[in-house]
Length: 259
Ligand SMILES: [Zn+2]
Image (cartoon, rainbow, N blue to C red):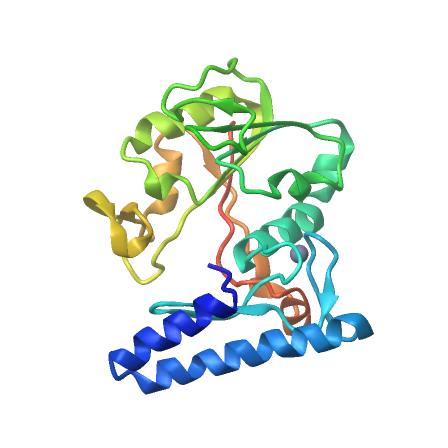
């Protein structure tokens, strides 16, 4: 969703055609951000730091697409968004000792471009898998992974399960490939106001292809296949200045353990 000049102008033009002046004008703010960034970059000023790539500057770039605006969304250098910056911060700060203790076998499901860098602070044995993405080392269905039982110390399943129709099979495979005592990050988009998860029956275009909306029963879904939940508070109890400096979000990071 990172937007270049022509795309921003295109979005503005569409808003103008529809008479949505306020949203069109917001595009100028986003363009001004990019101008500020170009001017300030050579000077090395700014106190925002991307914990994924080390970039330092005056602000993270806003996401501006049709019907989407998020201030402070993207790192200008590596493109990491708030959830991935938060994940990196969490892995290093909260689970750093776990990863540094020994060489951990990590399985990354549906990796993004800089997924490997999430674990750059520790000596991990890294494996990535996806149905078809060229970013993954192995291609396979999450419901039928061609990977050994009880092999991995850590599985990252970051915003994947809300796209998977057969959640039970996917969770079963994550459980199977984890060794006893191993950890899994089962992060999903969820609605903390909803009591129960709602199944859509089919991918919903308006929600980036999600097949369900998770509710507060999400922990029960993880424990139903045998996990112990270790829900982490993530950025909630971090200092505001730290959250601002690294551009973190305050979503709950969902960590579980195989007994
Ligand atoms: Zn970055």
